[in-house]
Image 1 (cartoon, one colour):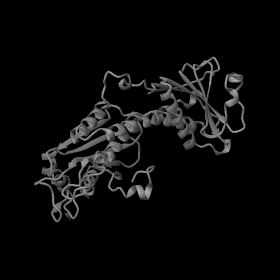
Image 2: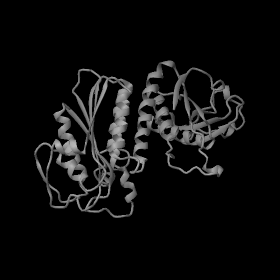
Image 3: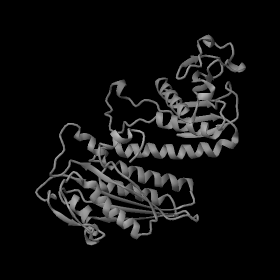
Image 4: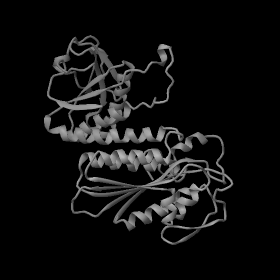
Length: 372
């Protein structure tokens, strides 16, 4: 999505939909006073009222609630709601007037983040028939924040990390026959090709076994899809420790010999969400040019049952030489991550962040907002 910052009036905003916030008890700005429907506009939180002032094609008044209760998260929610309204109207462009806020940079970031995340749609595999309902719907292609020019940096930062989040969602949503370990490796190579500060190393199954990475090799041996160990390095400089990202990349997890229940099995394509987060966080850091030396290690494989699959009771040897007895083949994530963590530390990572969908119980502990 194209995102920019402009200093212009509401009536001069060149957008199919213009959004303006209204606090509880406040009046609309003078430049839209008297617009048809003005009396219906309310400042109640989450209330949206469409006006037709004769300037912009459509003006949307968004209730911000009490002035002293508005924060960045609430504004992010409102921006996502406005993105949904833009989708209903098939608006290709949106302008947002920055509401009064103590921290204008945080408010601008919230608008950008909410808009980009709220406008996300995954329809790559939707069939295209002759019916008009099958035709692709117009997407929101641009966002203009009506705000001081000095907020351009905050807006651009928000655009980069929000677009990265949506790319991670694309990887997660892609079915396992289109998102295999080799496909994650191809994405890593794209990231590396975009910057001279990035290098990439891809180990295939033979190289993984030759290095003695028994955890990855054991999980992989049950199926025909070859594993990959992806290593990305970013030389961003700075004087801090080398940061390591490690992400679980099981592109489909049946549970192996300890087979998962069939109900909901299709969701096991999401077991590479840690890898998606690591790859796209890495890409965002590179795009922003952050001054950090960063190492990303992604072990990627499928976990499926067969006559060659690892069995409960088997003993394997991890990359660091420790032996492991496998009691549950559906606990495969820790096996591949153990090799990746040991390798990341060997390569020089001094501070490590590990991301994985290790267990559904994490939803009970942390809900859907926080990563484990």
